[in-house]
Length: 248
Length: 248
DNA sequence: TACTGACGTCTCAGTCCGCGAGACGCAAGT
DNA sequence: ACTTGCGTCTCGCGGACTGAGACGTCAGTA
Image (cartoon, rainbow over all chains, first blue to last red; front, side, top):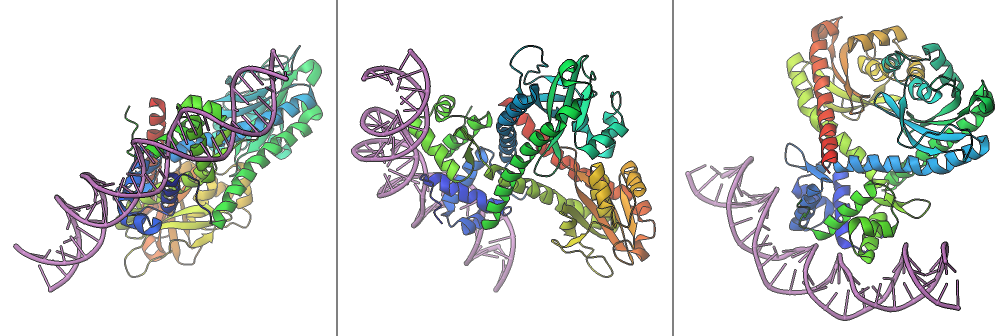
């Protein structure tokens, strides 16, 4: 197994992290697991601790550090956004309407990616914009698969009902007409993360004149396909990770 | 800001990871963000890529890599298990029964930590043992807060009903009597991760003769307090991470 | 109580590994 | 065709990383 990256210090640090992946270690255990000299193992672990990639438990053993969760969280967001660009673009081109990707942020939803219809009458939502969770097809999607109590709490003040959300779950998509904004209609579908949990909503939205009063009829198939594409991308990245873990 | 760990290569690698935390970067952008010489930035990024701490997106830009999620997952498990030991021990000592921590694993639950009553008649579950999700108070806890469809799928073949799970959610704990195993009764309560999602169940279990046919009456308060303690520990670790992120 | 062994942490001389100036090839823009 | 910027590679140099050994502490044993 060629484990040499060309930078010996980084190879050794990676060995230290792998040793700690198996569980908390005293320095002596780290020496045994890594085969590094004791001062080297100590120095590298303490340096990684400085950067919070490693921490210490109450017994003073080395454990993996909190920085890993921060970086992993950023990595997951990158992956979703990277995959979203082409999918939203294709949706926009196929449907002729603007497309967006929404995530939940506290009591609101935030637009994390968008591909706008280039000109004329359209529904334009800038990336970073926060919108209500009480109206709109994306809000329905982000709420429909929540756990029972959170779902019911989210229905408070909403323009949709539990019965509507049950239908959303059965169909696998949601639509709205003049629900969030007068004259705007939309269709949304769920993106699931590797755990199977709904983590985002893919939407297309536009003026009722074009999209019609039953936008699902026109666009649901395409929107669901786009959302499923993102779901697959995330699952594949996760499966590739798990597969590598098995081979180690 | 003293960012020197004593190992220059690791300091530089940490700077590279931080730069990529902000989003995908070409080598040129990495050079600009880190201030490293181009060949150095290239060499370190490629070395980190070799160890899967960094990856490349479809445009060839450097992004954070999948190994971070693997390590972060292991770190989260460590934190839960580290906190579980003392909590389960205190539960065992207070209730005089064996205590366990269960997590969901596919269609089963797995005992990830345990503190046994030292001797005599007791319910002893070894760490690593997998048990059914269709019976037992811990199974109820692991299922009660699932999203609607998953919850109903889990009820198939189960010894408990949707009405029972609704009561579990309202009370905040679950009990079982001769449900998984004849003569054994148990009480369980939920542990929530930083996202608020139920990720584990704390249980005490023992013979009906001692625990009684209404074990919740005896032990629910203590079990809930133990589970809440674990929930707090995980939330605090997460809040500390978020706070550090803000100061950066 | 004294001794021993193991642990974690630190020192410092030596060497070899990480560094970057510069070269190279490629692609895009003018 | 020329220029610029990009990513990747080379190689001589020096300083950063290394580990044998020292040191202090603690726990276990006689």
